[in-house]
Image (tube, rainbow, N blue to C red; front, side, top):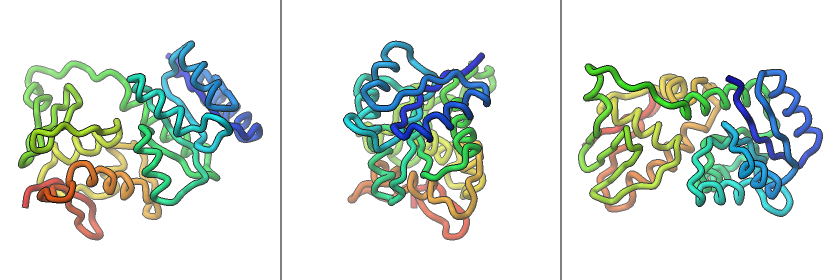
Length: 234
């Protein structure tokens, strides 16, 4: 089945080039120049994935993202941004984006991230009987994660996580006490290793910590310097 992409980018050259590349890759693309047209197009026909430029005139990509999430629309969103500071990335994640690509970008990286988002958004196959226990509630200290309902609580308080944040926390919880290296996490969550220079994982871990390990709580997410991350109660 052909996947559909809504592409919103105000730079005509980038929009047309990316539209051609996505079409040649096999996607059915609707390309628009601003956030207002993006919302109208999404409301007419919901795409499989949305690609949003952050800085657009009028309604920008962050505002589009916030509107969709407020409406309960969980369509995967990939942000395109020239703003690469950590605070800017966090703002995009907080708006509800699932991933981002910094400009200038290689089109192959965009393809890889879209494939990963679409894989995670695909309906899961029913578990085999012997796997039923795996699909229940995971508990680490006072953290409770319901993988089937995609809900998380810490000390009785429910946490609001983005799709990628939940996937990352679930991976850590299923491997509680085990140190997962960067390569393993990239492969399992994004389906692509972005290399040692990427800050993508560190940004998500930092943002996840703000929600899972707020001040006053015993930290559960731990960094093993030079190796990776683990979820455990100390």
